[in-house]
Image 1 (cartoon, rainbow, N blue to C red):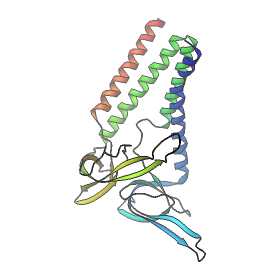
Image 2: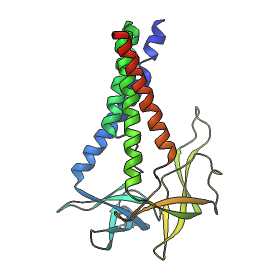
Image 3: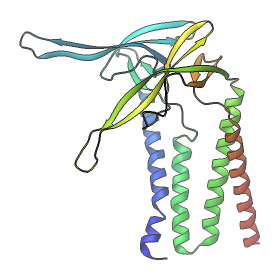
Image 4: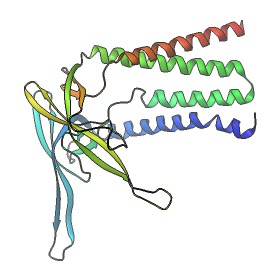
Length: 270
């Protein structure tokens, strides 16, 4: 195996490790912001105020959000430097003696920060032992990765199953377009991401939600398309993930593969 190939084996593990540590840093930063609740954007208006010399005094977005305060639904207006779309799900952070803050909320990852970072570290060790010719140690790392990934997927499946999510049919009413890059000499053409905005009825009330799923293709989501979102009656929130059978099958397959690898390791050692 040449040196380039040996070095290339480290790349996936390094990338996954960096992603995991980034997720950990984000979680720690969010915790420092204070208590948080999930909220939904009702409206977002751009506020610009200038003085007599045409200099900007204020430039912010006035964002109105609805959230559950533990007893009933409440409404709050937040000054934000970021634009949000109607129906977008956000995290509302409130801390005593500080202005409230909003952060875009994405559906939580199947693999959290620590499991992702540990998985990346094991992949780096796997590449290291493979390059050193230590096959047993490399197989142990592989078995741990497979069993860990399988166990986490199974845990996520049964956790979602336990929440008793109720499927709700939603209809795409428009698309929210976000520009992610501009045309350059190297990359031609502006790049956009498209998010579907859906409408659905819940408890006799019409609701609007900007979904977290997205696509770089403008025609991926079309007005009138049907989608399914899921209502959590305990937390009174709507999410886009459910306990799908594929999650169970992938988790079981990875766990079995990891156990099989562990058994083969014992056969080699013994």
